[in-house]
Image (cartoon, rainbow, N blue to C red):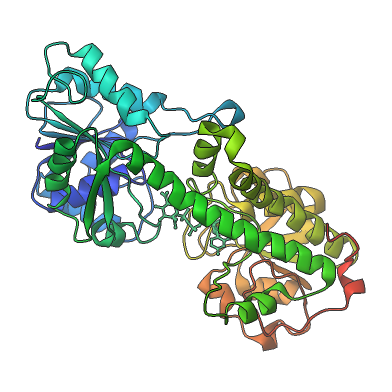
Length: 426
Ligand code: SAJ
């Protein structure tokens, strides 16, 4: 192959497919043999808009193939997960394991690119590891001015649901271990990226990725904190934000039941872990966003307890609007907690789910559709801003008790605080 992509998950598989479509022969490597077989059949194991057709096409044209074993290639792209472990310490063991298997296949002239979101210094660790494993190769930043290989860090910044589009249209930061490494990586990305590719050093590129997601987390935390204050004061936070955003330099994000997904709730911890004494704001933002889940559970519980005969429709389980990804979802956490507390009173509406996730096992809650929920439930609690929920007309919900955690029904009349059991807006 020309290119070897390590890790065939939400980033690796779309990336491998897009590179293959640009005409390169791509080998995708994953430790999971089932994933490898699925892709070699031209099928996919993850959900992403238009990815199935693309993968099927490039597999048929023999441009993409999958394996559990690395093979020699000109460019290696590492797109494996970097979870966090105890005390939110980043775990880069998958990146180092991928680098170890790549090291064995490396030859002079090759380029190694890390794309996995990583704490600052990870690409240096990869470089040192390769230098240690391959004493016969001149490694940039380690041995001499004319290294045999190039090593760079180039984070992705694609939005789930729009991955294929953003992989091509977004600008990229390309951080080399040396400027020459950055130029080498740049020429690779130019093959399939239409956005601007900006070169820098590896550590700055690593930090840039973390900063982007921490920026969003801090701003969402601001909105979530406002919503808790507004609850306490009996104000409509959505109205306040709408009005404040009319200021030409104010742009407050949207409160919700918490922050989900696999990046925004994780990456800020990598910064905190790297500088624990200097990150009170980033740390607090994480805590505010995690704490929002408990606030929503408490408020919903009060409303449900204040109306002991009412059935409850919980709208949405996904971690954000219009996608079928339920992993790390605050909506799912809220819904599962309420399901285990209120059992068969809970009706879950999630057009993107065929069955309730295992977190609901034994709770007695049921999955239903929008129309049945509107017939059966007196309490409605939107947890995700799916378009299908937003489209429910006021006439169908005007007589309901609504706790709108996403602000999807701005025309919904306010309800009497007594009916809501709103003592504990804490
Ligand atoms: N959310 C709110 N209020 C908002 C915006 C988002 O509560 O105003 C919530 C969402 O409902 C969701 C969470 O935040 O639970 C994250 O959603 P998101 O759409 O902000 O981001 P992700 O996780 O889908 O993707 C992010 C993106 N990063 C940024 O926008 C800075 C994406 O560009 C990154 O590539 C991705 O993380 C990643 O892989 O790092």
